[in-house]
Image 1 (cartoon, rainbow, N blue to C red):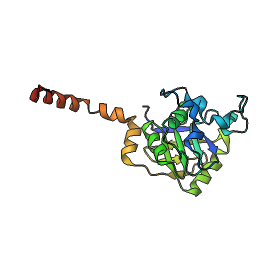
Image 2 (cartoon, rainbow, N blue to C red):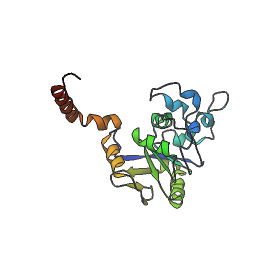
Image 3 (spheres, rainbow, N blue to C red):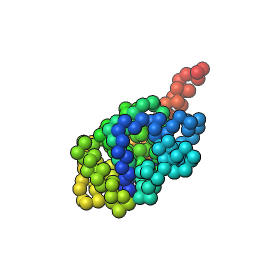
Length: 201
């Protein structure tokens, strides 16, 4: 997976609470096991009208936020079912960071495994970030994972906490497979030893 070091980009304000994974990517898009192509289904019930045309009122359809890399969301983002397609859809759309006061546990874990950084902030910090995001494309945020900082367009800085192991994995682009492959020499040595000691296996 791609490394996450410093992300600078437009932040889209999604002022909704309890956004569940079915809202992030509706069930009709779950037929595929591919991680690409799901961006078109991201928030599809909010982004599109019944006739398939775009809903101009939804934040990601507004010109300033069509290329958003960061999502500022209300409390309890990613609650509901365990579908891993939710972070896949966000990533395919181009969003690498989601900031909220709280997340659904499974979504939170799945995000790290797919190269998305979910950041927890306080309610007061979230309101400040919403205000920054409301400025549109003229105001970008910078998320610095190494320094654990969110820098706003006016120079303000918000510090955030993250588990050190998860931080290491994101900085180095290591998902579960990558972590295993980092130990391939040890695994090969172990397997050779086992074959020599127990040739009947």
